[in-house]
Length: 150
Image 1 (cartoon, rainbow, N blue to C red):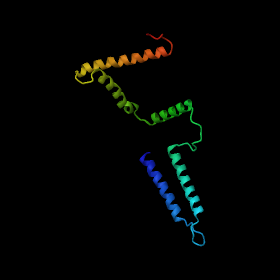
Image 2 (image 1 turned 120 degrees about the vertical axis):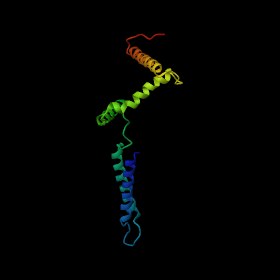
Image 3 (image 1 turned 135 degrees about the vertical axis):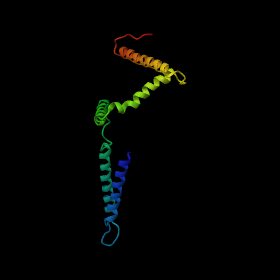
Image 4 (image 1 turned 90 degrees about the vertical axis):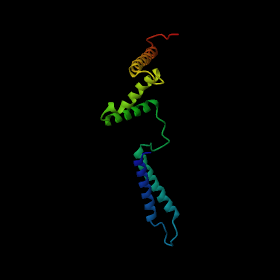
């Protein structure tokens, strides 16, 4: 849970406590009207929970059927498009991931880091090309364009 959401939750919860303690739930004889107090408290908590559910986009009912794979895929696409719509510089946002992918091939060809940088880069480039050529081969076989080899 994010700090902002936790603060909102704490604020709503404190408001519920303040409201329940500021109201007088005593009958004419001064005895606590416990059912009225508990109904009020339950209603206040339900309102707070509804507010929090809206903030974090939790389904209102856990009895709803689970999402189908197609619905999950659509929800993921919506999230991805929303993220990229808010990202001012997509290249900067993915720079660390791209660098990590390239570093993988350098570690593959020179695990000890003993090669000269130019040689390590040359070999890493070939390792990267071999990796992606292998993916292309698997894709072609899966599509039925090539028979599997033994």
